[in-house]
Image 1 (cartoon, helix red, strand yellow):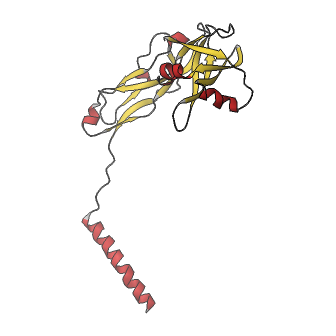
Image 2: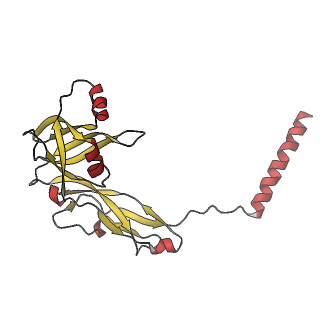
Image 3: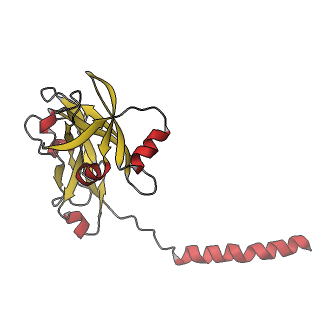
Length: 215
């Protein structure tokens, strides 16, 4: 996996309102932490981070560029991002420092390609999961797994053991669960003439019974 260089500067967190002030100044508040790293509050260039990292799919590694020696050239996984509920802009990021020689566990998205034979025959493609968990070295993290659904007929499924997993990457699972399937479309049956007649008879009888009760 390619690492993306991003500018990072240390910041001193004093008050909750500091985060809003930071966002208004074109920065994003973030925190860097890891198994061997004490949490450090930092700030990111908002424009750079949104353009280069925020819109990417899956897990991504960033190499920190900073004048501060405690941050410079560290490699981190973008662990989590928080978004503004209206604008959709990133308002906070969690960076998890990694050792490039130690395997880690991450989630990798699935991309479904092709048109399933069962869909051509009227079925519906039904993804069951959209990402799976794997263990690998940080630089071996796949951007995504391609799942070709072309051969799927109605009732067929692609299972996790059917995936082409690159060498050095281990998918973590306890059973051979299905990733995607083609299901039969649910069609509501039209009522039979007898059922329609029975419904009409009941609806007609109800007002008549009410009148007799009044008398």
